[in-house]
Amino acid sequence: MKIVINGAPYEVSATTLAGLLQERGIAGRVATAVNEEFVPAGLRASHPLRDGDRVEILAPMQGG
Image (tube, rainbow, N blue to C red; front, side):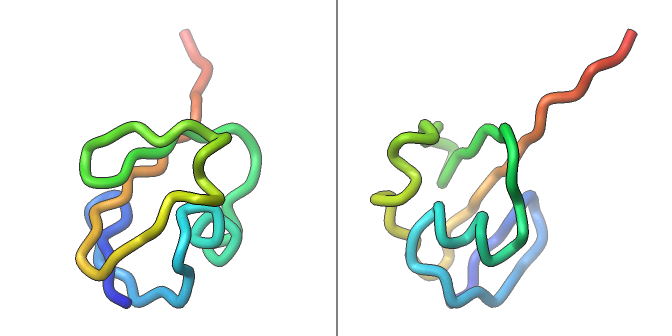
């Protein structure tokens, strides 16, 4: 399936948001949104992905 992750197109086999994070090797604390809707960590395993979805994955940053 084709989706957009942080503005870049990707072909993925994952069918859920949690599966996508695992497929892309993303671990740790991140914030996620699908089609501009925030998806809490506890709902990622059950949140389905569909062809054409737009996924945003953000990691917290520290700095001054």
